[in-house]
Structure formats: structure tokens, C-alpha cells
Image 1 (tube, one colour):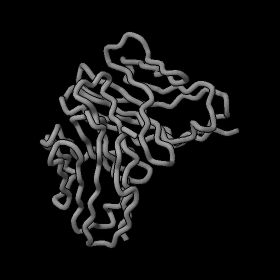
Image 2 (cartoon, one colour):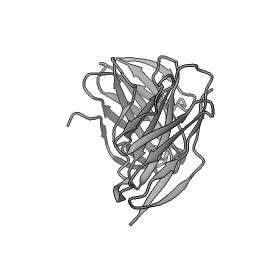
Image 3 (cartoon, helix red, strand yellow):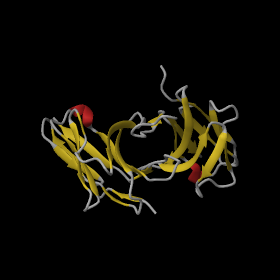
Image 4 (cartoon, chains in turn red, cyan):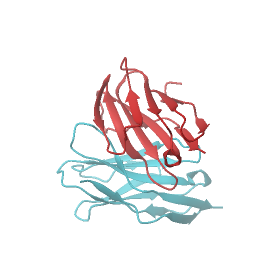
Length: 115
Length: 115
């Protein structure tokens, strides 16, 4: 399978704990995006990388959130000191350098529940 | 700022009939792209169709067509011959001129196809 892969698919944690999500994009894609989707809403942009460089961060990305893409391949999204409001689906997407229509290819998401 | 508005939280359609999902957008960019994604209960965002702002003809992809009315800033999705498997959330999204290629999403429409 050469699609976008996200792990874990589900994570239940207690308030105050740290969690980390991993995204493996399509191998030749140089851009990687993180989105957050709360129940009944559309995905909201969090941040994106071009290769290993983090080029844009949304104001939604508080100081408790950090994303990395150290070698320009997979990416991690860490949430420190989780709060109940962090409960959401975290979606990863990627796109190649020669984007035609520019559609993002999404993974199946990582659902976070903070108790 | 860019904005996508989907005013139909939920829609019903009878199997084999056509349905139109509404989307209006707002942008000051002269060049932009409009997308529709389908999100089944599994969570993955599936790309359906794309319309560029300078495209002369409405986009079509199989049973999906995009009714693009630039002056009205609308990009409605038409699904013909609805199937039970079309039951899902549908999101309209926009990409502007900035180099990030990020998409801004609407709040979505839940479509239920009745047998």
C-alpha cells in the first residue's frame, strides 16, 4: 500500500499526558500537512512541511503542540499536557512536488480521546 | 481571508436519484482551486473532483460533476444515480494562490442515501 499511513489509529489518554502521532506520507511527496477535525466539523489546517522545513503554523497550534519532519520523510505530531479540548481526529496529508490539480492525499487519521 | 460555506448539514436522497450539495466560497485571489472530498465513517478523506478558477468547463468525474458558477462564487457538487455507498460526509475545500497548497474546508454535508 503506497498511501498515507497514520499511527496509531486510535489513542485514549488521560488529561495531562503526552501523546505522539506519526504520519508516513506517500514516498515521493515532499509536502506534508497536519489537520485537526472535531466532531461535525471540517478539517482545520494546523501546519505543513516542505521536505524537513516547517513552513507554516496555524494559530490553532498552541505551544503544547509540536510537529517535526526530521529527514523529510515521516512526520510526528506531539501534544503535551493533553486537555479534553484536544479530543479530535488528527489527519495527515501529503502532496508531490509536481502537483497538477493540487489535491491532497489524506491518511485515515488518528483519533484522540482525552478523558 | 478565504472562506468556504456549506449550508446543508444533512441531506437525504433516494437511491438512483441525483442530488446537489451546495458550496459557496469567498476569496480575493484571482486564481484558486475548488475541491470536493468524501469522508466515509472510516475517516479517510477521499478526493472526488477539482475545478480551477480559470477552467472554462465544469469538471466531471464519473457520477460526480461540479456546477461552477464563478460570478455567484458557488461550486455545487452533483452526484448522479446515487448509490448506497455514497452515504458519507462531503466537504468542499478551496486552495488559494499562496504557495502552501493548503486547503481550507467547509463544515461539510452529511448525505444519506435511502434504499
